[in-house]
Image 1 (cartoon, rainbow, N blue to C red):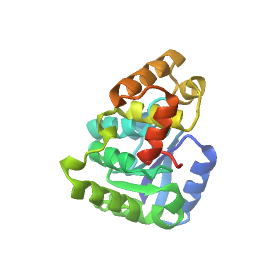
Image 2: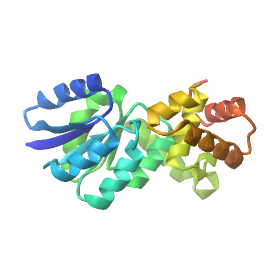
Image 3: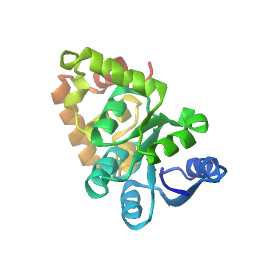
Length: 212
């Protein structure tokens, strides 16, 4: 039996994933987490074989979870299951140590296969994730993205601002203060050479972080 940890802040999503997993017969959900800190605690205290982790979670996000788990349980394979289909997220999660990357849209067809493949010692990328990684490699260092200089949290705040969320909404989503959000916004403007939220939004759209 392959024992799975599910980490996603939406209960309905976890219920759907659990249903997909447990109808297989050879997989079982050993533990569930609604945020990053709980995911790490369970991964370190429960006998789980594969961790399925979302990127966007309150407080400690999936990228931070991956980094900490690779440091504390390097043998545990991590599958990223997310709504994000942007190159930056694929590159960052794989670089952080994730062994697989699929989107929630493809979960019904790919989730179980991906878990089995990671448990067997392999990797699993959705077709789109594999294509994005291949394009990054083909571009080489000369094709580095201007987003590469941003921290994981700065990338998240940039996307949230581009989606029109207020500083208070962002603060509540990430469990940080409004003042901290404003600090991230100031850093983004300085790093990217932009002047205001409208320019941040246009930049994020041009980089494929949000749809136009």
